Image 1: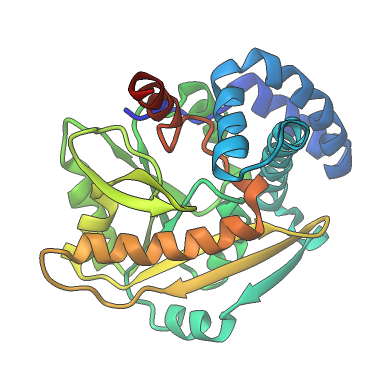
Image 2 (image 1 turned 180 degrees about the vertical axis):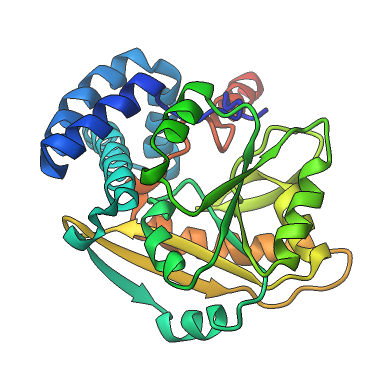
Length: 304
């Protein structure tokens, strides 16, 4: 795989428990303060992630040395804030936040149809911040995730189910197609199936795309399934703006047909994702060599 991601969520069960406790008993702002200290630990003790953020800052964003050093801390802290907000909002504290919408009227009209749909997002911002909004419509959210997601985090989520209401997990195992049937059944029931369209574990099933002006690999599965099943596709991102404020960005994908349908769908997705990352570069939370910059650097050195 390009980079080091292996289908596991970042963080651990103990960390989740600590922040759940702090949010419940001390509040969200206390959790932010704790996170500012935790970040200092993660920077040196998560060398692969830190190296990936550094390459992203230097070679993708084009920042200088000092700005990149500050950006590494900013990126980790932003990730921590989003984790805190995710737990707080899902735990019933959404009243303490402000929410803004882009294309709200068209989205509400779409959701009012009560038909099955595919919601495509990425590891950008905090998509779970919008869970209460979808719950208003009685929409069941089926989250498609890799089966080897960190087991400790799964256990914490299960023991705190009231913090994560309305979510059902459809596990994906690269050696099985069982998830395809579960996805089809969910769509037939008029439910929403949620994919993250920016990570893969199967190197044999990839799509090539361009993000922020550089070539990258994306998973074929979500785009192929969305195109073949014929369900409407909505791109959705929840981006943190001012303190305790999120902007929900929704775009309904144009219909795609033919053998090149997955590539056309990916092109629409990366076009919007590119626009969002240029506004919020610090909210890119892929802590591995997404653009395979390390390998490209070696190739350049060999040619030189």
